[in-house]
Structure formats: structure tokens, C-alpha cells
Length: 447
Image (cartoon, rainbow, N blue to C red; front, side, top):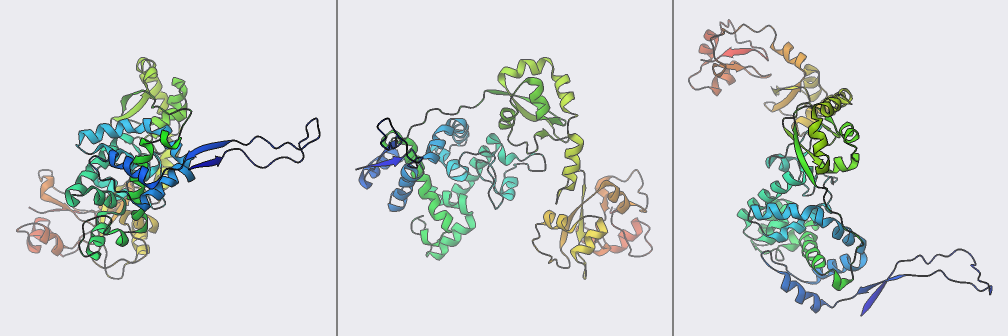
């Protein structure tokens, strides 16, 4: 059995006449689409299976039909893009001793889009959530998001997959946990009566996760049997050959692109982790990727090019960075212990920050805070000086390890509990305190 896909438009302009005054329909083009049986596909999937189980059933077959019939254009786009990223995936998977089949996972996660962002905040080829990204040392701030770096994010994904396999010892459960999180998979296992097979806990998993593994299996099959489904593309993408230089100061990509006569979009695509099109002022040895054919020109004129790039747009970006909700740019971190009766508004007013900033810094979604809660507050340097003003001078011969910087909400009793052998009386004697009053930013001698 075969199916035919309509490629041309059936809509025609009114009354197209030939010399004989007869209506002529426009030419219609069709694409031949083989319709393979369930058993034919089953035989091919068995041959593909290596380290990761490729379970086959009606759910998997439905996704194969989707990728080969209903959304062939998406599949063709993946066929065009695999050469951009699969070599990177294969390198890190081999480095960490992981199955090569896992390279297809990024297609399901992001459609091989290194700057993809989900509605819940996941980003990059491997769709790391912010917290998970930080857990695997993917740096994120106003300027840089290493979740978008194909190399660093791929290595982080390998480390995450390794840790999941150490816990679950089953690749199908690992893939489910990568999508839903290990907690939801463990909950599904408990609800199923402690069964340890993906298809036995299937009904207890989130809806998205139920389709995740079948899509993964379907994509492996489809990209290994393109010809059998008459899937063809006219061209494929290949990565731009590049080399790196290390930059430790602000540099605007647009300026570098102009001076090197490089397409800005190409330079941006080589450095997708630079969210604002610029290396930040606080950068230390940032590995900037440059087209390899432009390296001699950059090497010969490096100081001139980078000095020029260090001017363009820096002031505007710095101002924008400092005004972003939750920005820590140019600020210093202090801790505030919530006291009875305090609310976010009064705390924000005290430190001259916004309520939205405090929410962002502490992952607070409403206005509820509780007495005793410790909050991270990022204050401007001038505010930090104000907090530290009027404190008694500390003798120069007292090492920093023998001092304690008073945080908002601290009391002598709480400080004494933090250090072995320290009492309130000893604290007062060491610091010539006449009463129990201390101020945020004050430095106390503790030994």
C-alpha cells in the first residue's frame, strides 16, 4: 500500500484558458510515501537495538507514522541538522562511556535548536532547567547561559544521564527521569506497586513523559530508515570550522564581526551562550569561537579589534543588566533573617531593592515568608557601605578567620552557637560591647 502527499496547491485562479478556450487545471505534484506494515517496522527495530532497549508497540508505531507521514517536514529538518551536533554528542557520549543511541535524545528535547527555551524555563539542546543546569556547573547570568553552549551542555547532559543510570539501572527509566525528573519516576514506581519497567509504570507517569520514550524510539528508527520512507533532502547543514581565543573583558560580537568581515549571525551561532551578543565585563578566559579562516587576521590585529569591541554598547548593556528583576550584577550578597512581623515590602525598603528582586533571588512565588527564614539579598555597593558603617574598628592583627560579619537578623546568641566554645559573655568581652545590640555589617571578633 502507498500513500500520496499533495505538494502543489489545489487552488486555481479563475478560468485559465488555453487557445481552445478550455479550462486548464494547474499541475499538481505528489510525494510518494510508503506505508509500511507493523511487522515490517518491527523487524527493522529489532536490528537497530544495541545498548538502549527499543521497545516496539502501537504507541511507537503511531509516532513513526507521525514522523514519516503527518510531519515529514520536521523529520527532514532534523535530517538536515544532525551533522551540526551529532559529532559533538558522539564525542562526549564515548568519553563518558554512554550508549551512542542517546544522541537522538536532543532531537526530542529541543529539535536540535541550541537556543530553544521552553515555557517553564528549560533551555538549550538538552533543555536543562536553571537549577539542574547550575547543579551540573552550567553558569547562567544576564550575559551568559552555558545551557546554550553545545559543548558544555552536552557534557553536563552526559553527567546527568550517568547519575540517573546509577540510580535506576534501566535506560528506559533513565530517559523517563530525564524528562519528568527522578522524583516523578520514583512516585510512578511506588504507585504501580514497585514495578521497575517503563511500560508497567506507563499509566502513572505524566502525560508528556508517556510519549517521550516512544518518540525517542520512533526517531531512532526513522533517521536510520530514511530511504525506506522516501525521506530526502536537497542539502544538509555542516558546522562552521572554528578555533577559539580567550577573552577576559567586555567585547561586542557585532563589532568583531564587522572588523573581521564575518556574518554576525554566523559568529552568534558559534557562540550561542552569549545571550546579549557580547562577552561580559566580568569574563575570565571566555572561549570565543571564531571562523578558522579569520584567525590569522584576528591574531595579527587582536589588540586593535578587541579594544574597539570593548567600547560598543557596554554602558547600555550594563544599565540594562542592573535593572533586570533579580539581577545580581554589580551587587554584593548579604543574608537577612526574617523577624516576626516583617513582610517582603518592609525588607525591600530596608535594603533599597524591589520586592520582585527578593522573590527572584529566593525563588518565592507569592508574598509568604516566615519568622526565622533566611533570605539572600543582593545590595548595591553604596548600600553595603551603609550597612557596615559605624562599626567598631577591628585591630589589624586579627585574622579574618577570627571574625564574624553580622548579617541582618543576627543576635549574639545565634552567633555564639555557630562557633565552638564561644559564649555571649566572651563575645561581649572580645568586642567591648556594653549591651547586646549589634548592627548588620558589623564585624565581630570571635576568638
